[in-house]
Structure formats: structure tokens, C-alpha cells
Amino acid sequence: TGYVTLDIGYKNTGATKSAITFLDGELGILKYRGYPIEQLAEKSTFIEVAYLLIYGELPTKEQLSDFQYQINRHTLVHEDMKKFFDGFPSKSHPMGQLSSLIGALAAFNPESLKQGLTTEEVNLEIIKLIAKMSTLVSWIHKKSLGHPVIYPQNKLDYVTNFMQMTFGELTEEYVVDPVVVDAMNKLLILHADHEQNCSTSTVRIVGSSDANLYASISAGISALWGPLHGGANQAVIEMLEKIKADGGDTDKWIAKAKDKNDPFRLMGFGHRVYKNFDPRAKIIKKACDDILEKLGVNDEVLEIAKKLEEVALQDPYFVERKLYPNVDFYSGIIYRALGFPTEMFTVLFALGRLPGWIAQWKEMKANKEPIGRPRQIYVGASDRDYKEISSR
Ligand code: CMC
Image 1: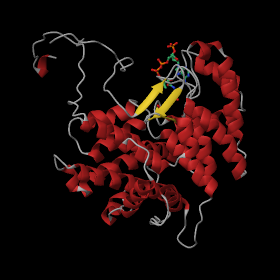
Image 2 (image 1 turned 90 degrees about the vertical axis):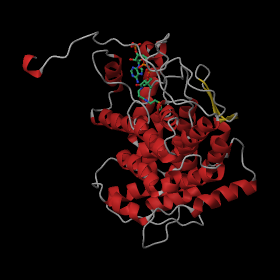
Image 3 (image 1 turned 180 degrees about the vertical axis):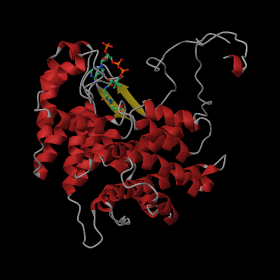
Image 4 (image 1 turned 180 degrees about the horizontal axis):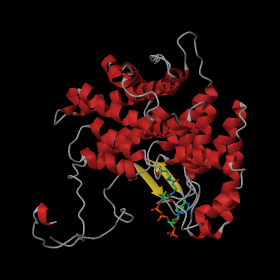
């Protein structure tokens, strides 16, 4: 019934009005709540940006310390979750583990399933989710090593606590290098929101059915997993490693990416909205140089990445299609320098994107948006009569 506008992939369909993130793809501008991403990446911390995204304003000193305190109070995860977690094979993909663990949090927090939660009750679930996600991500990393999990130290700030749970050991005091904490803060801030992308739209649409917060975020994590979205950061490093093993011939791989009969795409290149430099990629590229130098890491794939970028940016195929490096092109090189295995990269993207997903879910609720339900243009068979199986 009625007139249906067809827009496969929602390339030009606005699904909502939002006051969270501003993005100008032609000019390469990104702002959270009006603040330029460059300033936030330079001056802020991840937890402050999380507050900004979720509550709309930069916190005062008291608001920030209260927010951090509330989060620290909830970093422990129910021990019964560990039994469930122990059942994952040690080689299972971190993203599969994360989406299941976050979905399971709904079962462990039955109070979150009630309809008509008060603002305070919703806020408590938000705090719990932010707190427990970092603990769960650290568990996943520990499992990949076959090591026991490390419990949170709640005197620490969010990022330092996360790094100590992830890289600390039981036997000795682990002191997190401030260079590492700065780098993580920057990366998480740069990933914190990006308006109506695939995973965020998933979170909003799942939440629009009044599904609980944990279920909505778990769905967003699944959407992020794909290599065309957050999974690109893992795919980039795998691609760079392949090119390195192949002798580092970037021209050959650029030719493959241009060949329409070859399914290979230059991972970490191109974006649905940016038709100019992804401003996040600019910041990450510079951070990548700085951090590797400060940590004294020399990674050959960084040179390959820079060479690929240089060649692609001069090639008419990429120029005409306005394909530039995106956020995923250099982020993996930093994650690797910090000690994360490749399979963890997309989980780190999810950890960074969490406040954005929460803010968008909360906004969708506050706006009382109706259930998301696109239409279609039917192109299947018209009337047919059922045939008995014996006569098919
Ligand atoms: N390598 C080679 N060709 C490309 C690439 C690429 N990375 N990206 C786009 N193209 C070509 C594509 O083949 C098409 O060419 P033609 O017009 O001749 O058919 C043209 O550029 C437009 O591409 P599209 O696929 O129609 O664009 P889209 O908006 O549907 O897709 C994208 C955007 C990000 C999925 C795509 O650029 C891509 O697959 N990039 C590689 C994966 C990647 O890096 N993803 C991370 C995105 S940023 C972070 C995030 O979202 O998580």
C-alpha cells in the first residue's frame, strides 16, 4: 500500500533527527555535540567524551569524578558469567564472544528488562554496561593467551584499569605506560561515535522495538563485526601482512583493487559518507608515527601502508571515486604496537563505539521514535497454486 521510495543501502535516506554527531563528508568534518574531533582527540579523555556523547555536555569536575566513580563501582562481572565464558573455545573469535557476553548481560540483569524504566534506572544500566564491557574485553584477551582473568583495580581511571586488566599479570604490579594510556584514549575517542552508520542504525532499530539496552548493543556489535564496517581494522593488517609476504609490491595490489573481476578491495580505503580525507584517519596517521617512535617500535607494515596510500591517492581510479584512507587504515598498526593481537582489533573498535551506541539508543528513546520498519518493492512470483510434493 502507498508509495515506496527505493533506496537500497539507505544511501540517501535520513532515518532520524539527531543532536549527537555532525559529519560533513565533502569537507571531512566530524564533531561530537559540536566539538571538533581534533580538539577532543588532543585534549580530552575517553571517559569525558563518553559523558559528552551520552549526556550532551562536557562534565564539570564533580560530574566527571562522579561518573568515573559510578563506573568503577560496577566493573566486576557476575562470577556465573565466567562459567558461561569458560565454555567458549580458546580460539573463538573475540567479536563472537563479545556480542554473546553483552547479550548475556541482559539475562544477568533482569531488572533491565522491565518496561517503563525511570531515567535513574536506565542510567544505572548505562553505567553497568560501560563498566562491564571493559572487564569483558580484557577477559577475552586473557582467554586468547590461556591466562587467568585479572580483576579490576577501581582506584584507576577507566583506560588505565582496562589496560592493567588486559596486560597485567597476577604476580607482579603492572604499571601502565602513560604513552600507552594516551594512545588508547585517543583511539577510543576517535571511534566513539559516527552518526547513523551500520552498527548504530542497528542499535537504534533493535532498540526501537523496545528491546533492552544489552540486546540492542549486542546487535550493534554483530553489525560492527563485518569487514566492510569495523572488521576492516583486522582486514587491513591481514592485507598489509599479505602484501609484505608477497614482497611488498604495492603497485600489484593497487591493480588488484582496481580490477572489477577481482573481489579484492583496498581495505581501510573508501567511505560511504567521506568523499574527502576521513578526519579520523588524519589524526591516527600522525598518532601512529608518534606512538611507534615513543614506544621504539619499528613496524614494516607501516611503510607498506604509507606507500599504498601514496600510490592510491595519485591513481585516477581512487581519485575519481574519491576513495581516501578511513579510520581503519592506520588504527591496527597502533593496536599492534600496544600489544593487541589482530583478532582483538574490532573488539577495541566496539569498546570505543559503546558510548556512541548508548547515546544514540538513549536519544531514540527520548524522541519516542516509532518502531523501525522499512518497506520493500516486491519482485517475486505472482499468484501460484500449491502443488503436492508428489507432483513437483
Ligand atoms: N577498494 C577498491 N575499490 C573501492 C573501494 C576499495 N576499498 N571502496 C570503494 N570502491 C569502489 C567500488 O568498487 C565502486 O566502484 P564502481 O563505482 O566502479 O562500481 C566505488 O568505489 C563506490 O564504492 P561503493 O562500494 O559503491 O561505496 P559504498 O559507499 O557502498 O561502500 C565502503 C563504502 C566503506 C563499504 C567501501 O568503500 C569499502 O568496501 N571499503 C573497504 C572496507 C573498509 O575499509 N571499510 C571501513 C569503512 S570506515 C569504518 C567503518 O565504517 O567501520
